[in-house]
Length: 120
Image (cartoon, one colour):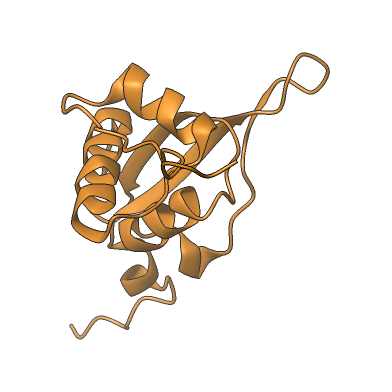
């Protein structure tokens, strides 16, 4: 007997998906950010974090519905942010520095801009 093709789009689900839990403060609390399906890969999450699109990330989860697993990816993403900032000399927003300090297994050496001698 020949089986029919599935109507479930498994190619969209068989990939790693990253979601960010963000702290919106005392009044609003924490919430999972609404994210376009195409913006849930690691590369896009790293880019959005470094560009300040997430002000106060708390936790990052990764899951793959096609493979049936999920995990806390917070430390992995924090380490990837350290590597990206180091490799590209990216400016890291202060709130993101706090996230990295709390979660990374690697240290982020932030270079502070010092005033030039004689500058007022």
